[in-house]
Image (cartoon, rainbow, N blue to C red; front, top):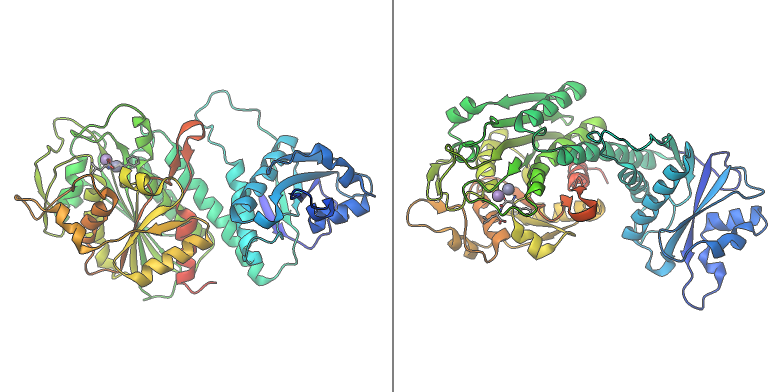
Length: 498
Ligand code: BES
Ligand code: MN
Ligand code: ZN
C-alpha cells in the first residue's frame, strides 16, 4: 500500500473512492453540524444526495456506508461515522481510519482518497494526523496468515491511498516517518506472532542479519562461548535447559554524525517462557511466545529508523534464549555471577527476563551511550497495575523519563511512570548473595525494575515494562507491535526532529 500527499477536492477527485467523515449528531443538534467540510462539499455537488443517504448510516462510531453519488468524479463515496464532534480525539481518529481501511479492503478498492486526514484531532498538528493515518490503515490491514493452509481469498489490495493535503516538507517528512514506522511495526508484529518453534533465538539472529544486509547496518551475533568468555552468568543460567542455543545480537545503525553518542535499545528476547523449574501454570502458556516482544520491538524500531535514513546512531541489543525446565536448568537457590561481577540468588526461575537483561545492560555500557532504554515483557504485576493501556516507565534520570513520556504521547503509544525509589530495593535482600532475583509479590513491577537499576548505575537508563501492551489476548490475540511507534518517535526527537 502506497501513500502520497496531493491537493484534491472531494467532489472532483478522480479516484476509486473518496472517504469522508460524518460526526454523530449530538441529541437535538441540527443535522448540519454532523457534516465534516469534505462531506458538505460532496453533499452540495451531489445536490443533497449524501444527506439523503445519511439515514442508512448507523449512528455508531466506525460504521461505514458505501455510496455512488451523482455529480461526484470518484466512482464511489465511503461515509465513515465519527462519533460526536466534541469528543473527537486521538482514539476516535485512529478508529475512524481503521474502519475506513477495512471497508475499503472489503469493497476491493484499488485506490482511495482519505478525506479524514485533516480532521481536527484535539490540539494535534497536521503531521500527527498524517503519521497516524498511515499507522491506522496499515494496522487495520495487517494479516498473519502465512501458516494457514486455507488463506482467505487474496483480496485485491488497496494499492494507493492519497492523503488530500497541500504537500510541504514537514508533511512529507511525517509521511515518511509514518510509512517507516508501519514497516517496523509490521516486522515486530510478525516476529511476535510467529510460533515459538519457528521464532527461536537463531531465527531472531537470522532476521537481524537480514536487516543488517538490507539496510547496511553492522551486526554481531555472540554465541554461547562468547557469552561464557564475557562472564554473562545470569543470561547463561536462563538458557541452560534449552536445546536452542542462546544468541546475543548487536545490531548497529549509524545514521547520525560520527562520534555522536548512540542510543542503545535493549530488548528482552525470551522466545518461550515456560517459567523453567518454577514452572508456569498451563492456562494461556502459549502466550509466552510473545515474551520476545521487546526484542521484536528493537528490531522493528531499527528497521524503521534505517528505512527512513533517520539521522541518529542507535545500537540494538537483543539477548535471546528460551526459558525451559530440564536437567540443565537453573534450580531455585542457585547463585550465579553476572557480567557486572555482582552475584544473584535465583529464587524463582520464572523471573528470567531481568537475568538476561542485567548482562545485556552491563554490555551496553561499552557503547558509551547517550541513553539506554530496555524494553521487556517483564512482569505480570505491571499488567495488574496498568492494564493494557499504558506501558510501565521507570528511569534513573527524570529528563530521560520526560522525553520518553512526551514521545509516547506523541506516538499515541502511552506510558505511565512508576517509582524507582531506593526503599523498594530492600525487597531484593538475601542472606546468600548480593541480591535475590525476586522480591515479595507486592510491587512486583517496581522490584523488577529495581533489580535492573543495580546494573545501570553509571548509565542514563530507562526501562519499559510492556507486559500489558505488547500483545492482545482472547479473540484478538496477536502482537500489537508496541512500543515501536514510541521508540521511533523518541529516537527522532532525540535527533532534534519536531
Ligand atoms: N514473561 C513473564 C511476565 C509476564 C507474565 C508477562 C504474564 C505477561 C503476562 C516474566 O518472565 C515472568 O514470568 N515474571 C514473573 C515474575 C515473578 C516470578 C516475580 C511474573 O510476573 O509472575
Ligand atoms: Mn518468566
Ligand atoms: Zn518472561
